[in-house]
Amino acid sequence: MAEQGDLFAAGVSEAGAAAPPAPKLAPPGDLLGRFADFGVDALDEGDTLTLVLARCLSGRADPEVAADALLARFGGIGRVFGAAEADLAREIGAPAARELTMLHALLLRTLAYPLRRRSVLSSTEAVRAYVRARLAASPREAFHVLFLDKKNALIADERLGQGSVDHAPVYPREVMRRALELSASAMLLVHNHPSGDATPSSADVAMTKQIVEAARALGLAVHDHFIVAGDQVASLRALGLM
Image (cartoon, rainbow, N blue to C red; front, side):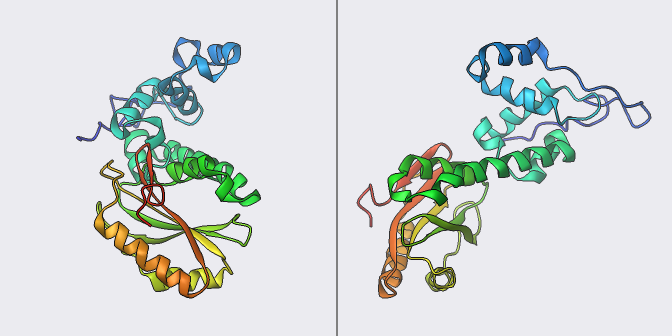
């Protein structure tokens, strides 16, 4: 997909280098009023993103135009939050990109909180929401391991492999080494498919079996392997592949 034009180019969203600073534009259509009166259900994702951008864009940048550009570029608000900061900056400028990146980090902490408080085995939907927010927007394959304690609560989420658009190198010995360092008792494996197809490949299945066998030899459990592809989250266990 062709990239959108830079909203901060002269003549598009800012007056030019010599122009004096201008006040931020108010959100169109009294979105704040609608939100105050009726809550977030009265706003679509473009409206919500517009309200957020109205608080962090600078100069004469129009928050509605910026929101439309981000949604067109990334395909939805779920992929805007979690997109690489450099990619966001090309659309809305570095300061606003940093604000969205920090909001995404806060979202991840919020979603991870219940996973640290109770067994992830009783929180399947919470786990799915977390891994979707973590990896749905990643343009390259990344392999994560959620390390769990003896009560199956989250100890740590760590990226142990990152690669190209269709491959992320994974080394079972490194996964085991880190599990022992963290005194983990179990694990959840997670990686993404930037293609948008959550179907496990033969390589995904083979790699999962290698890690399961290595973990079994050390008395560790591998509860599942999730594949995130956009809004989809596939479970190898549910598919009978592990």
